[in-house]
Amino acid sequence: MAGGTGGHVFPGLAVAHHLMAQGWQVRWLGTADRMEADLVPKHGIDIDFIRISGLRGKGVKAL
Image (cartoon, rainbow, N blue to C red; front, side):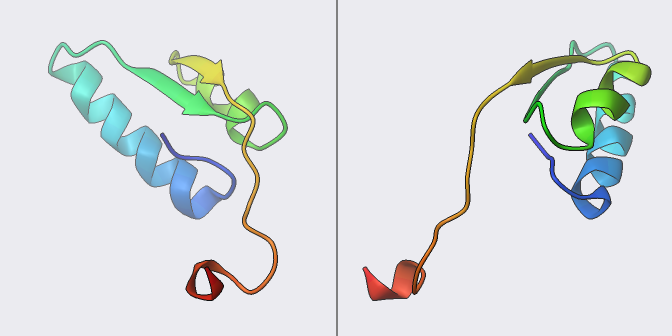
């Protein structure tokens, strides 16, 4: 699973291609409204979409 920015998606694609070259079946977990929605299928990788959002407020430390 990687998504949202190129800093996460492109390294994830490199890992996915490496695993596929070794015979692994790869499925991507990402969001429909971010860059991975278009980019990942163009690389021949199946993608499943989930809804996610960031934490708002003072962060985890405030919990």
